[in-house]
Image 1 (cartoon, helix red, strand yellow):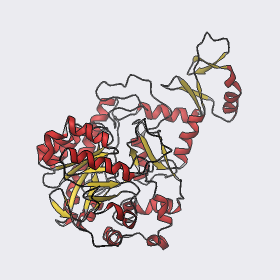
Image 2 (cartoon, rainbow, N blue to C red):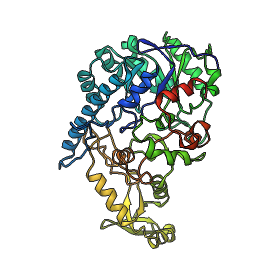
Image 3 (tube, helix red, strand yellow):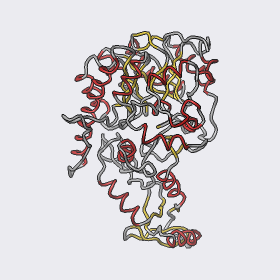
Image 4 (cartoon, rainbow, N blue to C red):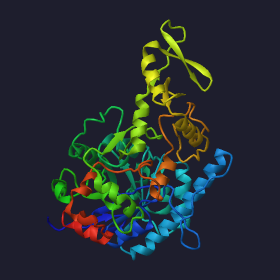
Length: 460
């Protein structure tokens, strides 16, 4: 490939390669600082980031408070302390090179407060804010207040247009670029709309051209950062120096997990190297309500099967109904479902739980106990959670908690801190199977970030 031109991002000329942010301590100050030191843009996550004690050990995020509002306050304080710690580590490790970005989810609990407090205490450490998972209308205002750049994550020109017209046009000077994240292939939460078919991906080039046209209409001569399914840059040559797309950079999320600086690299390596095409699945299991992509492990499989053990609640006056006990209350279902229900109960799924979709699902007594425990111990990690029914603005979503989902904060913490990877949440992009096919990783090789960046710059 031809030599890469430097790209102007967050006020500096850097390599057009960006570390993708991965929450709950996967992308931290070490990975971010190393990526920046290699001449690119590093990204640490402020989503439940780790903070440390005087001995340098990560402080466990434990919640013993009785009230959910108290637990949520503690969660916000943990997030702020962790974000400040990671920002300072990133600045130190970067050696003054590259750029340092902070990634947040707009729909995480207390997002605006967490962002503001981190930036107040870590002045000079952060050059840009990257934000997705929702419509971050106040993102530009917060960035402008601190004189740093912001990068909204979108999956369509329509979403960006709505954001710009409503809010970003007021703080246009601090809009550093737009991250286009492929909603079918990127890891983590995806911006797939209800009008789009999750089983029918659309060519990203067409959507990128539409996005650039929209940006041109707003007179925005800033980079598009392409994210999702980026592995070898040689496969994206047609997207570089392309007049239809304008200036571009590329984000590496999943591939940057396997580096010596990443805290989960050694634990995750066997799982990632064993993945086959199709082992990362796009589902609507997340308590955020968004689609998300994760490794199909035992947790995901159990959740998918839980969806299958589901029957509709019917009108109790219907002549063709029978009743099922749900925590002491008789709930009517269609008599035609009787044999299915009997089979599930015989297989051990004897506890019925009601959902907000006017259905009931069948789980084991142990699963029901675990679901109820997690719902009662909700810490308010999301602005609105369909699993627990929590809403930070109203206290409740107004719907009953959904037992078809799961506690996302708990399961990401387990995956990031040495827990069982079969029973926790491993977000990953759909190209993760390429770890096992890419000769760069032969013999279980884990590169440093510098080695990975050098490899990427060859085009592979």
